[in-house]
Image (tube, rainbow, N blue to C red; front, side, top):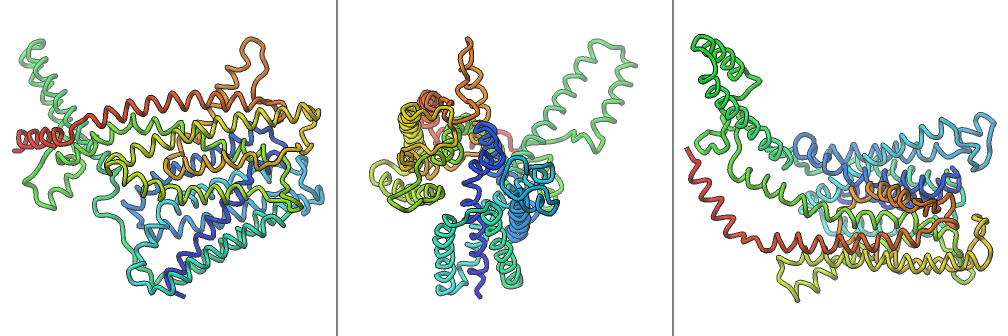
Length: 519
């Protein structure tokens, strides 16, 4: 078996885990009997943490571990996480004690909760580790891997995705639904380790992670600040104290400033040091290029803040949208369609829409504006998604009132769940172009809380009730529509400000500054 196939099988963990976690919200509402707001908060916090952690993971990969060890660690975390998740389902531990034999809220005890939350922690490590290193490590093997092995690896992944999707609709027990990905992940991890000696590896980057450079710039800048502050103190002391006292104070300050803990002669640009000296002083000195990169990083923060709102919209896909579908008619003719059908179409659009977008826009607009225009398109799609979701939810609530299901949350609503398909497709397009969703997913928990508190002012009912039938998700979706529209306007203004900056002018300024401060 080629190295490419051994690594490719790790994608099993990603595919099957995505399918299993996609139905996590219905699991928490049906088995744990949590209200939709609580269940959505758990899922969104977990998803947000799992998508934010790759930032820290990338730092460790570049600075210490390398892609192989990160991939091995995350695959083991996947195996532990999915195994604990399967064990946390009620009948397994409850049957051993003879207390419970069904998926009921009364069967959820402290043991199940500990296992469940521990499983989520391991799964977050697994997901973030694979996001960080799987593609990178796979590309390292491409150059020497024969084409038949690459084709075999791709075929195995596609075949598993199709078989897994078909099998899910016949699985009725939650322990098997979570246990099947656990078994496949353990097998995939074992196959991966069997080829450890044959992999082409790359170690940590000698200069560490880009984040390391940013930290170094801040440390060096702080050192200069201390030096300037020291000089100002000395000048002030000359005018306010006697000569003898001044000498004693300066001796004391000199002893502090010359100690190893206080770099008293830090500089920003050092061009004449050899490699050994640079390595010894890398936390006290930084080049003008590093200063410029750090400045650009700080300047990009306002742009990144605009991305959060898209993450808030994306987060409602596998929580509120899915819970709506769970209460609706899931039959297509005589066939009962499983909920992960939405995940299938979602991933299909996410994977292909970006390629189509780039191919089309490159022919219409200059290449440098393609990413900026892409974010505008993603934000427009998020607005359209919220509008469509609000309209469908209004229709669903009308059907509920018409059939008297307002106080009957367990009744299936006579309305096809495929009314929700357009909004899932729009969400897939948004994530395909957008990509950065971690902070927004966590922020969605705060948005639900704030919107709920505002909605109940003046004695009015909260828009988020214990059941979907009594909630007013349509109002929440309209609120997200307005917020997304405001966010789009702010993004256009920020993008316009960045576009108006002349790159050649900035480069000239940087060159002049470097020439002026060279020793």
